[in-house]
Length: 487
Ligand SMILES: Cc1cc2nc3c(=O)[nH]c(=O)nc-3n(C[C@H](O)[C@H](O)[C@H](O)COP(=O)(O)OP(=O)(O)OC[C@H]3O[C@@H](n4cnc5c(N)ncnc54)[C@H](O)[C@@H]3O)c2cc1C
Ligand code: SF4
Image (cartoon, rainbow, N blue to C red; front, side):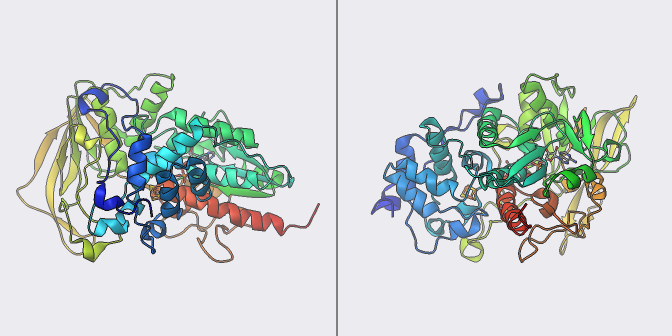
């Protein structure tokens, strides 16, 4: 337990945010790392309650009571050893995880939860600064070769674990730089790419080989909206012939479209067209061709991707940003005793939404209107939700919103079929790569020596789940490699 009277004497400390008026003018991160004293007091609020639901709800099962104790004692080297035993990239989850753990914090039942995520970030940053995070290359090599397709958090955690076990890992990424959605998707103001590069350098020094701009499979078969900067490709058969095991971590890239009248009009884009182009502009590549300056932007969708579009559009000078969500508006609070330790179904406001956006709930899009081939308006109707996923349009509530740019941020259905077909894989009912999560065949696909992890297996999810799956998959691959006859 941190301090004897920790939570009685100290309130939750939120990390400092740069003011909205300042941060909307740049793409730099705006949430600070806690200071030593802030982290000490925050970690000291942990009650070490005996049944840590926070650990259970974190997909990585990070040991919060242990690292909180070390931070409140100022023992950062011990804290990072505890944290990195379950999480390969705490500096990333400490920035962009929704903190499923905090929802389950026992203190939340009667006070405000411990700020676990901000303590996690503080530990990781302190550890990097003081040289506690170093490359740990394996001294004994196994001479087994593993190919990993994709370089998002699932691929990277899997690659790091397998390399540290002595296997020779090669990561194939179709985009020009590694990182998956951490690189191209999540805006720089949420996750600076220097933070990602610092970690990639460590992986390289540990022995992971990165082959970027290489597509596995056939470019012509990629769906519309799947981004590819590859300059060459390798076939599935080449990987199967050259490697002892293949891990597929391709993410969930096929975007959900809104095939409504007027969808063909210019000015309507998938969210990632906009977000990736902005990441590329910031890393010094070409300018974002989707110009929102002085324009009315309508964003369709209610999730994290939509929120990121809001933040980017505001920074690019949009005159007005409106977000359409067909779900109904949730209450601001719910009776905790009925929900805890689960995620509360309440109305949340993201940091991008608080920067200035109009949020319309129970609003369904019915058509896009325009002239001269360009979008000018979005037609909407109010909906009333019934049982399950059924809703009905309310007569007389039709409306039209001005829009010169529309961003479709309705999520992703499944990984690209191109890769699935290249390996002749079975899929689940939603089109994800079929591979169980548990049991003796965990992470094994329907093809021998081919494994799958991350959003491409689970469906679109969170970074913390991807890291957890990458780690789980590495164990399955290691067991498989260990069962092969000695050479
Ligand atoms: C805009 C946006 C914002 C998000 N924000 C958050 C957030 O704040 N917090 C959070 O927890 N989660 C967030 N998420 C979700 C999170 O990013 C994903 O759940 C996570 O990145 C999935 O990791 P992954 O490794 O499975 O796949 P990805 O990160 O999608 O990486 C897959 C990689 O595989 C590559 N690839 C695919 N097919 C091939 C092929 N055939 N050959 C070579 N390479 C290939 C792709 O190019 C890509 O780089 C966000 C998602 C989006 C879209
Ligand atoms: S990874 Fe996410 S859920 Fe797990 S401890 Fe960190 S913030 Fe909490």
